[in-house]
Length: 115
Image 1 (cartoon, rainbow, N blue to C red):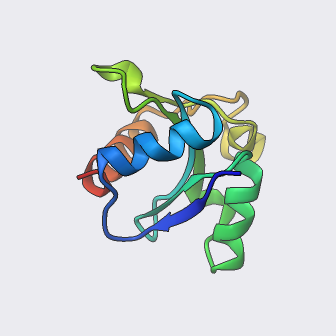
Image 2 (image 1 turned 90 degrees about the vertical axis):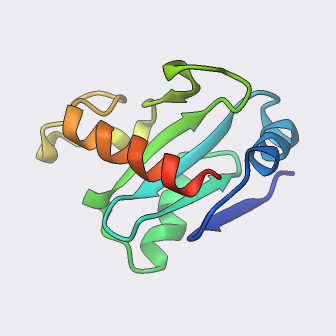
């Protein structure tokens, strides 16, 4: 079973690759909190990661599910795809993150935390 980890400072690419190997082989599920600038990585379900963040005081409207592919080079290494992203009340009606500004914030946060 793979470890679930809250990232508040940074995570290295080798650590991310190790988490990928533990569960899905080439991918790590992650949930980011854009208000608190933290991310949960590892585990099986975005919903479990979302629950963990909400239990830590995060607000649901600030958390978004993504998938990270640590061996992929280029823009495709980060995928905006999660059931927790379906939020009609926030005008997000798909599993993707439809707002380009939110996508940019997610990319910036992940890049900041991945060192």
